[in-house]
Length: 348
Image (cartoon, rainbow, N blue to C red; front, side, top):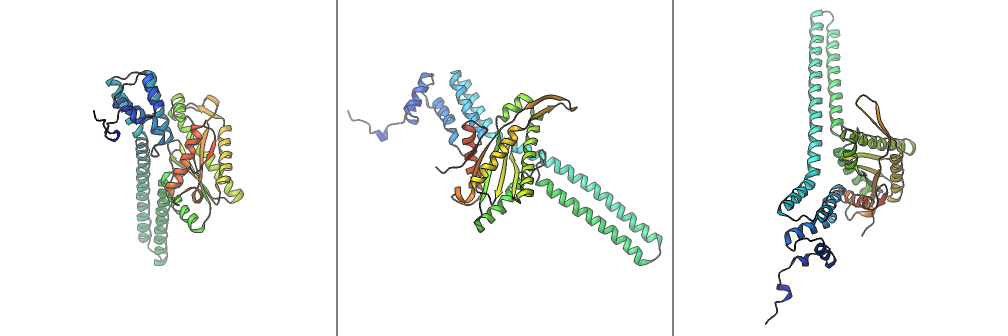
């Protein structure tokens, strides 16, 4: 009887995983069909997918462990796990959409308020012009009064325009720069760093166990934690600017993740500065208050993990995407190796 060539043999489920992994799946009773094994292997390998953030990777790992512990391999359970996978994958987009809608609503309200202010300004200008004409008298004085009214109106419009621009670049919750401002700043700074060969470091900062913190204390308290981190980053940047004239730019990158760019700062120095910030946040005594301002709990601590990378030293191409990716990988190492620490990117 002729043997079927190895290359022509159909792969069995064992061919898609290492022998030790398949043995483990056998021990916990995972069916030997490609559906369940393929799904579990997918969840085990998800940590290698660069398009996922750290929280998603942790959730996929937790979901996989939950499946193995429950040992429920029914069709109903399979559909439930598939839906959980979909929720994890879509969570960042849903959060981004919610954040964008909230920012848009705030801008619409501000725009409406601006229109009402301008309406009042136009009415005032009309009144000034009518009063000047009806009062008669010297023509030059009358025209001067009208000109001053127009100048006041223009100044008010310019001031409102500046406020509107600032609003589009500011995170409504933390009052520091938002993702849009970060992208614009990085575009200019990366070009400057590349052109003049100046070091540019970035660190990505993530609040540890933020989901658990939210679940335990509520989203309103979680928002307070984000405000605290934003205030510490902003204060640190202002202090470094005043004392050492350093160009440090903090921004809320999204969710519980923050980004800080440091021009003319090497990766080694950025690591030291990042650890200073980590310790500042670690030492902060977080106080939880009710809506009336009464203290409900005090002495609560929040910790952060930070990943650091340098543009010209760590990136194959000097662009924003590669720098963020390198810092994000360092952040993942910091979180997966214990949290509440700073890790620098090391080329593999």
